[in-house]
Length: 397
Image 1: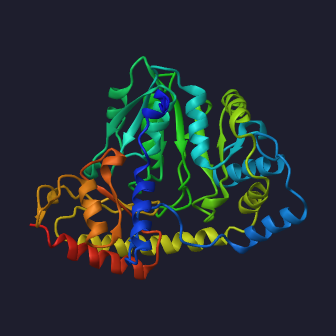
Image 2: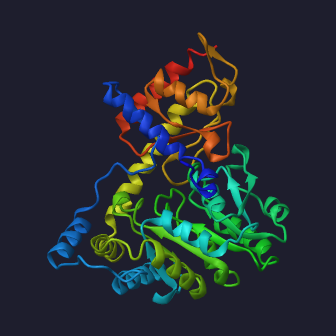
Image 3: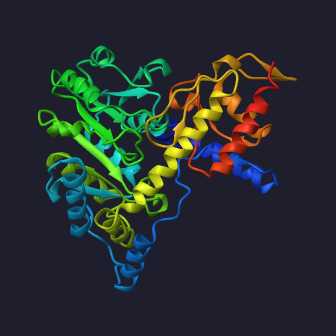
């Protein structure tokens, strides 16, 4: 019989990739679509990083690499964590993978048993709950509203923890909201977690450098919980290297060994040439990171200003990443002809098919009253996209 596994049938397809695909289909038909659905920097990979990759090819880095990554790359990550984050790790506490997405999934698969609960603040990145389901765990969602800047409180965290809680996934700066937890906010969450020693924190920090409020804060900075934190990061966002597929975890050695065992059985080590490029990204000049960060901050200011001029949208001011996550529930129940908007997914499809702007409904992120826009695109595209969105939403009555 043509029957897929129950494991696979439990999973939902990626809403962000689905919307991007629909956008591409319209573009192929000649429709001028502005794509704000995908979280990908629009910059090219910096030249010094590309040059390191070219050298790697010429020097024949073309064979299998060690499962956890080349020693030189792991050492560059150790130095980066010390230099930028004040965190001390040994190379044996680092594991490099095929993107931070695999790093997250490795950690979940290595730690979560059937029936274990994983706390996921909502809004959340679409893949977190699907990975937990893949591990036969139970996602437990804690809602953080726009009124609290999409950040959970210590009281909410305490209320969500049960004897079955195995992990908390914390993403800061956040996808999809751009919210950033301060040092004080992280310390308050840490104090709750200290009373629950079984709970591991998966700290997804892939947007670390796209931060508009100063120094990035990691929950791993607190010595009394560091041995229960898995730091997840990579090169995709900060260095515009999404396609190079290099991520890493920094974690207690027993977790790294478990992830290494897992990775050794289903992907082995990540791309050899990409690793040499990532080594240069971490160890080489860092000016490119600040140039891109400043551009994203300018775009943040622009899109927030324009979104606040659209009647019916409720907008907060993101402190990091490159997403805006406005509340759009005031449009639910409104119509354009025979078309009725009943959800944020309906609204996103309406904006795509009528306004020709690709966004993603908040249903997929656990916040059905909002939708996500990526401003990792040019100022001109942002201005035009927001003009289209304003005009399209004005048609609803």
